[in-house]
Image 1 (tube, chains in turn yellow, brown, orange, green):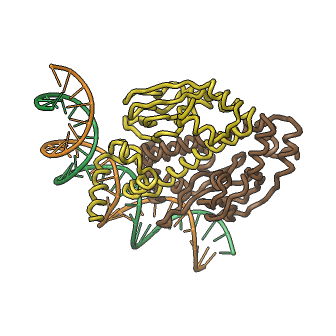
Image 2 (tube, chains in turn cyan, green, yellow, brown; image 1 turned 90 degrees about the horizontal axis):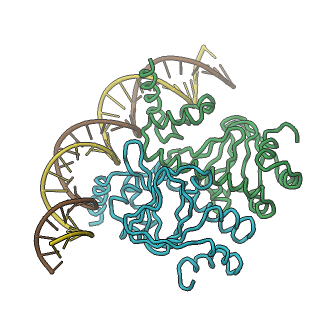
Image 3 (cartoon, chains in turn red, blue, green, yellow; image 1 turned 180 degrees about the vertical axis):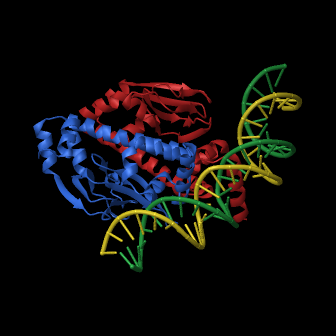
Length: 195
Length: 195
DNA sequence: CGCCGAGTTGAACTGAATCAAGAAACGTGG
DNA sequence: CCACGTTTCTTGATTCAGTTCAACTCGGCG
């Protein structure tokens, strides 16, 4: 375990205390997914948190009308999980899919609770993850409620400029909650304004 | 402390272990708000979690266009807080207001972290609160992305039938992310169908 | 009794969806 | 490395859900 993003991430977030890290790493496995491959499907129980070492994931649902809605992207250094499914032991309502060839670390979710009990630093780390997640979700709700397609797109650019280059437009549209056609028109309009 | 919802709630969620409960209760204060009174305003830092002993609260934001968006309601036995503000020590982007005369218990948010460290039962309780919150938020996002005004309203009725009777329609509309006029029309249409 | 906010209804408007068709980009196999 | 087929992206025409604005009703409360 040397110059992996994962270990760097852990030490900078939990500290360098050997014991916890050892315990954590001993419960992790590594797994690769080819572009297009699914990590999880709607109806399955989510058993892991996936840490993205390299590549890009998307998490999405398909509604009763058959439309996809992307909940979040996860590039390098991000976690992806369906905490709801894990925690309440319910079938997930989401899909998780690799948008690029992706290398992930799998963390058993029960481990999160166990380590929280035994190690204060880890507890605080987990707490931060959860609060960040909440913050992120609240932001999306506010946005969906109040922003126009154009505003959402501009917000996306501001928040995730790097993703813009890696994610096909069709997926950005799905994340923003608009159709690809609308996004195309928004972009056209923005280009016109900036001319 | 006898037949309060609060103590019942705590014992049934954390257990009857005297020590933690004592510690918890000793850090709580009780506070009443008149109908219309604000518990928190946008820009202030949120310092407490409010447990609703009796009454009803709403949490909402005002966007740059001056429109209100209700994030959640909190009737009896619910917690209301801006975890984001507390945890990251940032000014809140929300208002909290009493929709009825309301009695609340105030819990210092730092206490949550402290008690999590010292008591496993409390840690699990806090974890459950956070996961529930996340579940709730995710549900709203899915709904905002995929459901029509009518579907959202029906969903609201199913989820919170009791609130429907206590909350003025104008606030229900704000929660659903539609105008009061639209909600009125949705209701009219539903009445027509069920005739 | 009169006022005021909540709710309803109507008409015009609008942002985004839908449907359709063509252009550009992509990747896969020969 | 090219050719072909499949997505992705763009553009146009049309439709639609929900907003906006305005007028009117209703019910509670000082």
